Length: 214
Image (cartoon, rainbow, N blue to C red; front, side):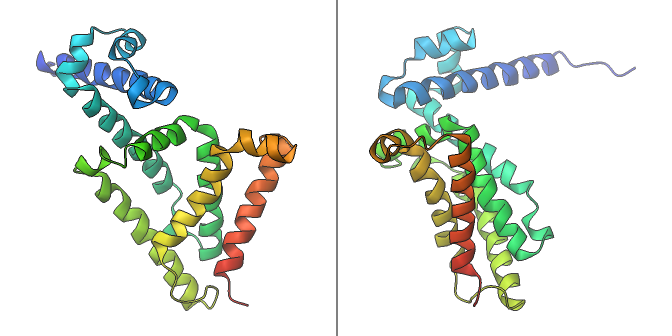
């Protein structure tokens, strides 16, 4: 029977503690922003001593960067499971559009974290050593989908995969990030079930309308 090294439980405990801190910090930063977040509240949410947060992450700003990186790892990992390279191009675009919409709906904290980082002009992400490498596979996969679609005579040529992804993300981000003001202005509940279904249909039609050749 293999023996467990004493270091292994300690490593597992450290991983669990860091994961709990990151989950608590995500909730706190999403609720209060970087400026309003308090390490004391994060420690209380995570059930750890405040000193442990500084031991693992160094500072509140470094913890915020770790939260941002974890948030991007989450969405990129879920996108990878879409297997866009394994399906025909139009279906791939439908999947990506639906996923982006549904992910933002299910993870409102992701949008608020992005809002907070944009207020700080991405100064934390600029220090990240891995953020760009996270996004490279997505851009390459989308470029492959567009090229396959063009070769099949489905998509028009010359489409920038980065511009396309930003457009898809923006169609969801603006709607959900401004749903309360927009609902008030236009006198309709933009988060009602029917409205959400209509929005995804509209997004998909817009994206495919741009991509598909006449």
